[in-house]
Amino acid sequence: MSRSELFLLLSFDLREAFNSVSFVVYDWFFFGFQFFIYGVILSKLIVTLSNYLFYYGTGLLVLMSFNVASWSGRRFVESAHEGRLRYLLSLPITRGEMFLEQLLLGMVVNLSRLLPPLFVILALSHLYTPYSLAISLLVLTLVTIGIMGLMISLSVIAFRSFDIYSAIVASLSAILIRFSTINYPLSSMPKAYAGVSLANPVTYGADLLRSAIGLDTSVVLNPALGATVVIALCIGTIFVGIFFISTVVEGVKSS
Amino acid sequence: MFRKNSGCERYSFIAGVARFHFAKLILPKTEQRFETLSSTTDRKSTSGTEWAVEAIGLTKDYGRKRALNHLDLKIRSNQILVILGPNGSGKTTFLHLISTVLKPSDGTALVMGYDIRKEALKVRQVSAISFQDPRGFWRHKPAQILSFHASMYGVGGDERKKVVEETLKEFELWDSRNTKFMHLSGGQAKRLEVAKLFVHKPKLAIFDEPTTMVDLDGKRMIWDKIKELKEENGSTVIVATNEVREAEYLADRITILARGEHLVTDSLENLKDSVKGGDIVDLEFSLAIDQALLRMIEGISGTVDFKKISENRLRVRVSRSEDWLPVMTDKMHLLSSSNRITSIKVSEPSLDDVFLTYTGNDPEKE
Image (cartoon, rainbow over all chains, first blue to last red; front, side, top):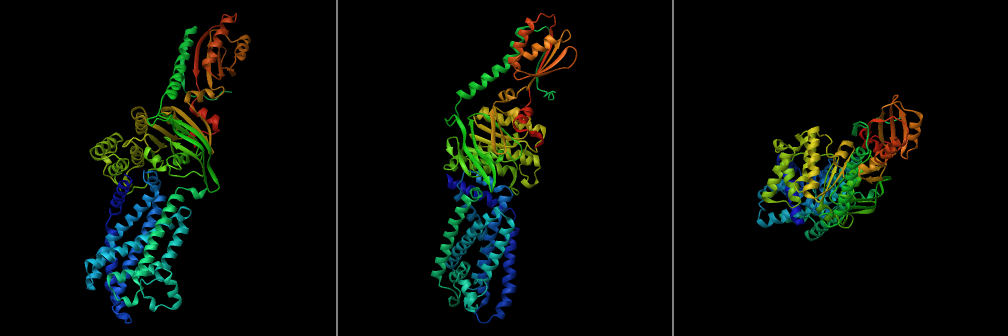
């Protein structure tokens, strides 16, 4: 009964999320411009990596996932400020289901934005197989869930102060993206930077995706290690998110 | 000397007064009180519990600010309870707590027998709330919103389609059913917010200021629908409002909150009676009022004060006109004067007066 209510809520939210497809199309254009212009030019400059274009392209996919995850957190914050969250809280679903619905919503939105770019990379790199497509989607989904869980958990800060939340998310995003292997491999980083990047789960997500697609594995981290970190990130942030949603959102912490 | 006439005149008659007139005067009020008593004690809710809501030491703090302070309140099943209170009195906080939108800082409440702390999901399955501000569904359309809401409460298939259509028509939203929420007027959005509860008719229906932003016709329609919810569906209804007219129209019982404290809960009649000197009796005599008559009036138990309006007219403030008038007429008979009462007019206190008495605030100015 409850599970069906979760999917009812999901379909209601999806209707709103896809009410305007312009954002989805914008993301495809964003990828196209970045990949075919910026990426092509960069790959001519960078000669230490064999075929940097696809390395850069997969990094773009992770970056787009990151953006969708941030959108989910921000959407959750907005729903609180717009009065939508209290309606959700009054509906006959558990807080955990409500959190999971948010994750599923983010996943579906993410896939809608990432599928065409992923096809482009797989096709142009001649690495397309049903297996590589499936495993890449799985990795992207796990990365998105992990980051989304983190962002939604962080969104509870916004119930105290939206300014602090915005500052934290902007700073964290800058750090997580720059100190990761989204745009450059660990081997090319100064040691100090590489040390920080190794503590960053996005590094493992990006490298795991490259392994899943089948790119040059000499410059990426061990996929088993990457999978462990990404799965741990997912599980960890889901639990933290559910905890925050079921405690802070209903106002217990304010007592 | 006197507070302004409340405008709630119920009885006025002119003549040499006989006792049976007072029986007529008193009877409707007394009957009404018995009816209320019998209905509240005999009736059981649809869930089998006498109390739809029992708040036990319910407390809510927002940081250092205490919004609700150890509230103890019992709400009978199948009644309309109206919560009156000035802004910041804790009305909305209380409604959000019992609908599990907020968690209490201390204490708890049982809703249809379910504990809001331990059985929040069950509480949400038997209750629903219409919020004060209709917000949050900018890109959805009224038909979609009602359909979704109905489906979340298990109303499915053709029944859902039918009930959504009926509700949209009843709430005058049919023509706007495919207009995006963000393009609805304030009144339409508010009607939609209220209408949500009528597509599944919960056992406990909670309305937070259900008619703000709604025009006069719309207000009456919403009030009638709320009454219908109780009478035809057997729902228990809680309405928080600042609007005294709304409270008078709807309430079986009224609770007054102020500064997060529960001040009183009672029927409208009893609350009005509880206002000391609340009933105003205007007497007109056939002859001029003399000192003996004034002393007699002053000596009657329940006389709070009086004022001569003219030579033969007197205005008396009394605690309960039903008790006071028979005593007064008895004593008039005993007076060895040929002076007779030619007119009696009784005005009872309004809910404004009641509210003022308990909180010291004018609700409509809040």
